[in-house]
Image (cartoon, rainbow, N blue to C red; front, side):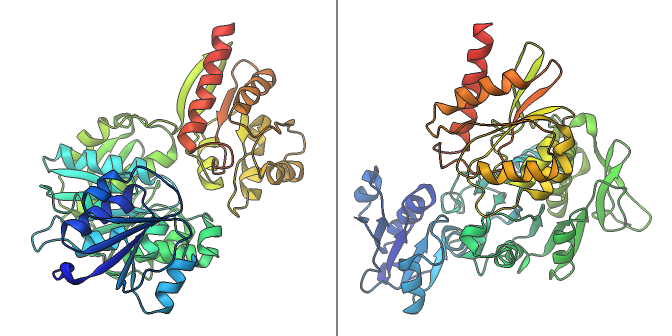
Length: 456
């Protein structure tokens, strides 16, 4: 897109993606004003000629485009004012797509309630194993505007529902929805709006990939334009990737999907355990195969993927009790996947549920729980669900809300656990009521565990 030197753009939110968008626009010659409610280090922006305005955001005069950061809700006064005035609102992802050149690298994109970062890492590893110049970007932490002009053959793109909400022309070569469960309802306003945002990833994709084992995703896939491909933990049907005993098998991207299949990898090739990670691997493989990656590169890429921090990560074993940090389980769907991997658990849970329902989680997995230790703002909702569906599970609550409360949480959990148990931090909730983010919560958990181990 040309003509940026005649445009005045407001960038709402100056976090990672906001600063990247502002710098990219300033570099194109646009008149850019950055807006944020909090102070920070904006020296790079100011050096690039971006004006920064702090405080309650007001739509600047003469603006003909607003680029918003993902965290800004659609009902934010600034964004509502822009839309009411007929000023377009884009996300950084939409901006990045429109800044692509004619020979730009194709995007392989994915979204879902859970597993996005793990899966985009798998996809990037597979692409690299095939010899492609690849980069993982988007919601994974690297802004897309920083990589669309780079020397890449293909881009592995993780997209959140927030980012998709503000995207309208993004057209990945292939796009996957991993799973769908209630999340971020406070931001979207309803489950229907959340699902609608997720489905936008398929609007203009050539290949639509969906989870055949997830009823909501599968129903959505049925109406997706483009070629439809699915993945399943069952034996694959024609047009699917799936599992045959211990083999990951492709019956979609082969010459004869009706009669033919190809082995992609074995379960032993995966260093990430759990059925949800097998599903993630199949989704990554489907996207890579849509790009033409050979089967052996799928295997080689998956072999090199190791567990990321705070994602079902073992911390230590103390007095016969295993301690596991899955602080990334920030909603009930993720916590359910985590709990499903253990047989006897002292469950550490709580935080900000963001409108999500924990009833099904507790009903299905309450029989795995030795006990539960609850913390955070919405702990009462989890306590009440446990009382209804798992009344025999002992429950302890930690009322303190300072970051040091995790020391008490771990001490209480250690007192409830028996040798052979797992003390599992799988909060089913966001962390911002007590911690900077889920990583800080996981770090606090690990530090408290190590302190207990050192004291024995």
